[in-house]
Image (cartoon, rainbow, N blue to C red; front, side, top):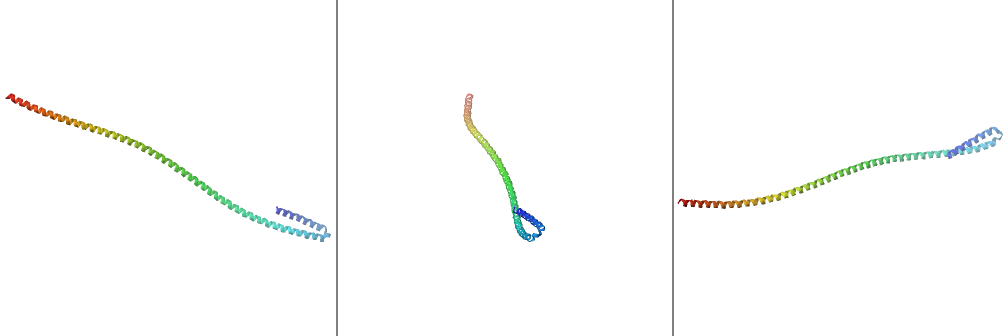
Length: 187
């Protein structure tokens, strides 16, 4: 805005200079007075040019500052891009880790199911072992009963054999007696 004001001022001064030149041409009799005015206008023009140069230098400083800010903004945008890439990488790593955790949880669930199956199978085997042990105990009791029954039968056989031996002895005695009687009868 200052620069535009300076430009307007320069344009205004230029118009005044042109008007002064026309007056100089038209009023040659007033040359001395016009020269004084011209000198004043020239001083003003020099001051305006000095202001214009100062504005130009200020504009250059502003442009340099703007270029510096643009460079800083570009650096910030580059840093932001790098950070965005890092964030995406972290999100990707997080997704991978979450997938790994899910896999581990799935594997653990499968292993827990296997453990439950093994425990159930062990319980069934324990039940079968208990049933077999009960059957073995029953068979052992049956064997003991059979052995006791066999011992009783053996004792009965021994008694029968002893009784038969007594009867055989009696038969022998009777046969001997019969033979003696037969001998007496013959006599």
